[in-house]
Length: 332
Length: 270
Ligand code: HEM
Image (cartoon, rainbow over all chains, first blue to last red; front, side, top):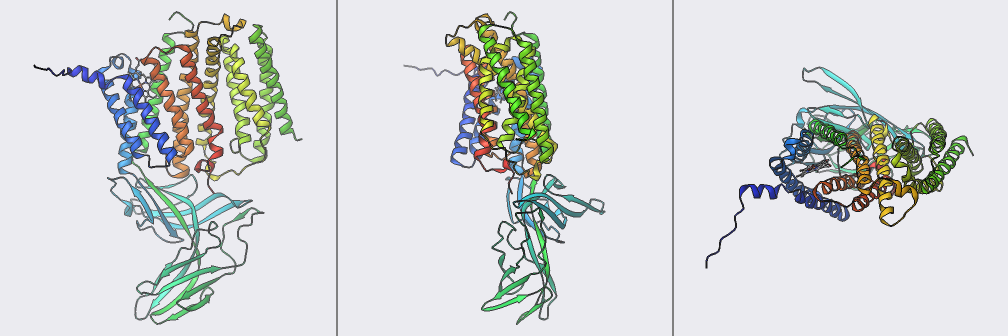
């Protein structure tokens, strides 16, 4: 006995792939994927990329096969814009960067992030996005509710000219496509000068834990550069800096001490005081501040915006034509 | 009681009066439409002054606390319904469905604390206003669609009051409701875009699947599904009406439920 496999003609395959019933199933799958990851608090990537990828194929097939898209330009433009959105979002996911960094007052960003995640094909150009933190002011409303953040920054533009700006809250600094935002993460930064015996002098800061979130944990362990010596440093002051009963501002304490523990030895330093160590001399210079930034890079942003506008405009155009062609209470 | 709350009470009383009259008019097929509209407009005026006084006093608009969000949405939903009531006579009997929904929101408003909330610095942007405006038009047009859809469902359930029997057939009513859905869908899309722009400025990302974003997207997806279902299969009007209700329920939960049970960034983290 002979059997004949039924091989669908090319048109049938395309029609099946373009089926609007498939669209319905895929839209439901997408919703289910999003719902499941939301309920389970899981990573959303696969639950999104699989149905979105299939929807994009389904849509591409429909655009090729379904004559409605040749008759109706608005509908065609709308669906093409949707397709562009999916492609752009995917490209964005492959090339984006999101990270965090901290800069003490006066410090220049050198491309080092404390935390980051990036798309597989992100090529970092962060070293080109150099800027310096010039210090900040933050206002607090009653109840220590954070209000405006104003952070001065400076950088050199492409012509080597010095530029200055105040960023904060909804105003990021944008350099070479990298968007730098101030964050709620900020705090105190003691400035030290380290004179190693026979070596060159080095100035540096340590960023104590974020204030006021970690108000009662203003301590940090760190290593003296070029040595094995570990120091434990704690900031000590008595004032109430941010009074919940009043409007206030982030500021340095008027009077403070720095507790420095090295092994069993404990020192209390006021600004200008120093400790002699076998490897050199450590001077506590003064107290300063640091600001935490988030950085975001995604070259697709303006294109996504354009695709969104195109999608909404063409959808409105399509609906307009539809309503004009068929009055709701006329003969169907 | 201060002027702000007195005016709000006055507005709510006028809305209740106009709403009850509109329901009675729909049931009895009477036509006191001009009076109903006039009472709603006076109520809206009092409500507008109340919202304005609060805005002036607190230095921010009605979009921080549940009280403010309910109040401003009662205002916008009524304004949009009144507009539809005025321009599209077939929408008038839908008061039977729309008004009880608004009454529930007003009752909820009355038992909600009017204490001021904290206005986060990330809210100082024009995109917030654009986002909220689009959102309000979206919810308003879906509410009108829900009213018309409710009429289809009431007829399906066998209710035979005069104004229902005088209305065009279910197929036409469904298309009328769908017209409002189309407008709503455009505005929901715009709301999502404006929200994403704001999120990019405020939190350094345009979309992060926080609870509010996820719920809003689910509503958008359900609408996309509904629109395609409608062109793919022959959908009986009552099924279409039920789907419009589902969209509204999802949108309602997104607007008034999610922001107040989650502590995600949309609340403006400290
Ligand atoms: C991804 C696969 C998709 C495919 C294959 C597809 C296909 C189609 C087709 C063939 C039509 C024309 C129906 C007709 O008038 O005969 C249509 C209409 C439409 N589609 Fe899609 N679509 C897709 C995704 C989407 C998505 C995600 C949306 C988002 C909302 C959307 C929104 C619309 C709208 C608004 C209409 C007009 C419906 C009407 O005139 O009542 N489509 N789609």
